[in-house]
Image 1 (cartoon, rainbow, N blue to C red):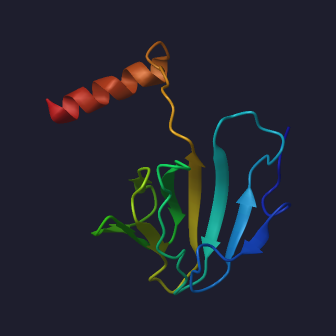
Image 2 (image 1 turned 135 degrees about the horizontal axis):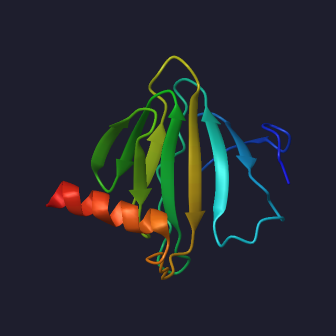
Length: 137
């Protein structure tokens, strides 16, 4: 099954941000993964809006820059991001992403309720563990 870029995209005001964000929710109502996978496009100067997902309705969010530049704030820390950079916003954290650039910022955002997962028997998980161990070791 394929879903073409922009075929189900819509404009949305995220958390009172500064501009509408173009969002495509990939395989909405079709995927059975326990996460939402979305592509967001923020115009130059656009921002999501500072917000948090409380422990009563816990959500964890991963932001991955595909194209453009971003500034992400999480619990008082500021991260400048470019293509390939990712930031994790844990449950309850105050966070916001904005586009400081002159071109559209394109992100993949994955979000859902945290739950235990065991990937240890997959080859890519084993390779990731070795890479982390080398970096830390």
